[in-house]
Amino acid sequence: MVAEFLITGAKGQLGRALMALLGRRAAGTDLPEVDITSVDSVLAAVDEYDPRWIINCAAITDVDLCQREPGIAMKVHRDGVANLAGTGRRLLTISTDHVFTGSAGMKTPIIEGDRTCPSNRYGESKLLGEREALDAGPENIVVRTSWMFSGDTGLCPFIYRSLAHRGRVRAVCDQRACLTYAPDLADAIVRLTSAGAGGLFHLVNSPGITPAELATRFARSSGGTVEEVSWSDLELDAPRPFYSVLGTSREVSLPDMEDALERWRKSDVRYR
Image (cartoon, rainbow, N blue to C red; front, side, top):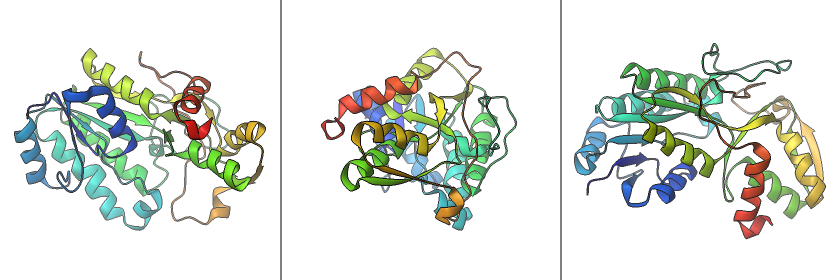
């Protein structure tokens, strides 16, 4: 089978959104059939599908696991990207707002050219993966994003479900970032590959918000109680960015947050 796009991590929410959008133009792969940390596995997939583009959605999304096991994070997020970039096919790989730390007093969105300062091991490994992709060729693309959600997966569904089913939720008040609706991101990714773009892009549904502010919005319509907490209260392994609101200096952007939330609510009967 020949496919224009090879999607790695196709079982994740962005991978599923891309497969739904691209249809027969894409070959979706995931563990165990394709392991991006194995050069042989990557090359076998490229030989089988002969793609023009590889879109890498494979990642370890457990930030605390990455903090405890940085070697595993590096193997997937740095070495895996290097293996994909080494095929010579055009590569688009997904990165994260955790390449920044920020501070509580910041108010200006962070754009592509701003200085990075990873907030944890996950962010460090993703930043090194960015460099592997971009150093391999200016035609490759890195997309930084944050707080992805769709269907019943991600921050938004978690907060909404907690309020609706349990009547309460604990929500962090000392981290500000942006939501990203996976179908919007998938659409923008396809547009980038069609436009012949290259380089680094920030793609999120602006503006920035804290989880506690999001929970308060949901509570107004669904009822329930919001308990504001800080990350330190949760005693997790990995620190999180204080401020990682992504802005962009590029010409590609996503719809705003309110529009994305409304479409998400209407798309799944469980959240009406």
